[in-house]
Length: 284
Image 1 (cartoon, rainbow, N blue to C red):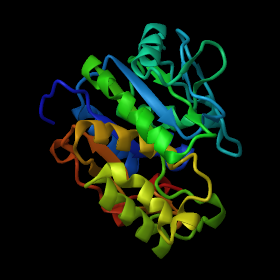
Image 2: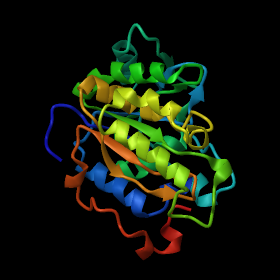
Image 3: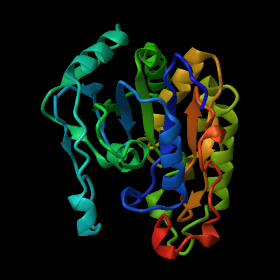
Image 4: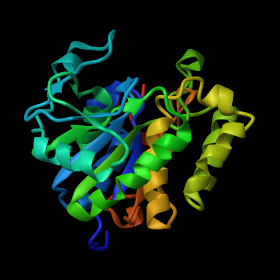
């Protein structure tokens, strides 16, 4: 990955929480991407799983690790990602986006699995300060794109901005017989999003009119983290690049995008053949 004065930014399709523990074609790609990144001063993650009626940033010195799911193996509940927080960076983030308001959360949230399931592979040592930015549930897509653009100066200050969600995320349509594939409607919508994000990311609101949008995005929380990368791309005047992709269980897509990085230069960039991976290491 070429050296740059700007810290790269990314959106990662995080899929199942089990990706935390698994070594599969998606997590291998996340690890290769992380290994090629310059070391950030801090990570700011916009996770699908902090979806509240307000915009806030974690501002505690040691964020708690939140296991916000049920029905998974004990090993996943035991997983710890003890990254420090950075209250001073939280205040810097709040100042950077003014006049937009970002509250400082000193004791409520922490790091949920949308953040640590991905960072477990991108920055496995958990030695870089991590903050989370909530997703305002009462705001439209344009608000989130604008807020993403307002975060752009943070890239000049060594902060790696990461959106964590999924382009297509419909849990009611999961097909456990298709661990490495997506339905036709999921593939169509995902491709439409790729076409926008790699060309004119500011046009992301146009995908809301896509015929497959209602099936692909039945609820907004997993899609909205992508809006932050679209805003950052808009501020940078360039498109994003796809660095991981593929379907999972029919109604999930795992597409990931990067800004300000050349994913092809990362070691191990080629996706492994899913047919050559043992079933216990697939995204199920």
